[in-house]
Image 1 (tube, rainbow, N blue to C red):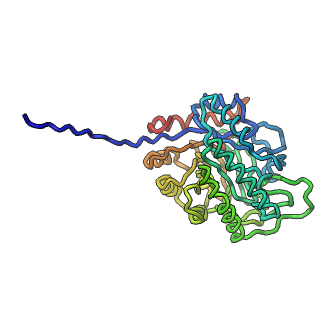
Image 2: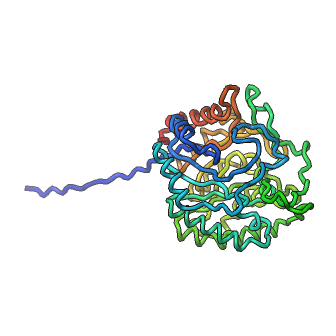
Image 3: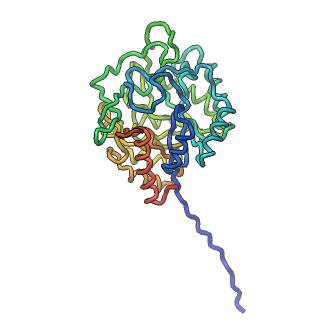
Length: 374
């Protein structure tokens, strides 16, 4: 009898399962909005714990960003482990996963940004909160290292069908208006600050501050299993309000990875902001860094135009071919989270919710068509 040998052939296939997420500000962290996210097909939540006092909790485009986001009331109110665990339990009770926290509160790190006298104590506070984030099992912490922050936008009915959105037009603002004392990241942390303004800050100084921040934070991030991911500058100007912007171009953004090769160092890849930059191939950048595993999560949003004039658009009406972007992510087996981030509002009783629902529905439909979504 001939001897028969049976060989087990194992075929490995790489399934790309991009996670659909929704970002929620602190005032929106409630059961109603978690149900809304679930109803829209989202499986993951990106949480902003930044809070401010101004204009109530209505998530609508009603304020002019030239005057600042508002006043942060959170000096000394650090993120405690019990509070993080309670919020995580609430999120998970709706069948959702807490994917990331986005942004430190300016009240917690203004002197790290400004190189002020309390920066070392504030650094210890950030490390404590980062350890709590790790203990709570939240894998990503997004941050935006900027003094001027998001500034210069104007709400206007500039979206398709006169939908309310935001527009940036450098010709209509004084982009070099100095930052008043007591403000950082376009939020007031000290209402009793003496009169005066923050002095000019050079690019070299900003890079020195970022290197110190990452040198302190990345070892802790590695230790507690949390990835630190940086958002690019929006608006992406080289300088704003007499202070240098770190990540205003593709080249400057990619310099982040030269600061440290730590696996905890990465990108909060905002497609809209990157598209606003005057030069560069967004698809090539997305291809490069999704293939290399450098992206923590993605702001999947669209814009029309570039600096010095652009507007935020519905996900399917802007300059970015969003289907092409998802094909790139599929090719590179990206399995992280994408969120709509900003979106124009729609004319109805719930303009913010309708805008988000439209974006999430589009995103989910394309993901399912490409067979890469949940």
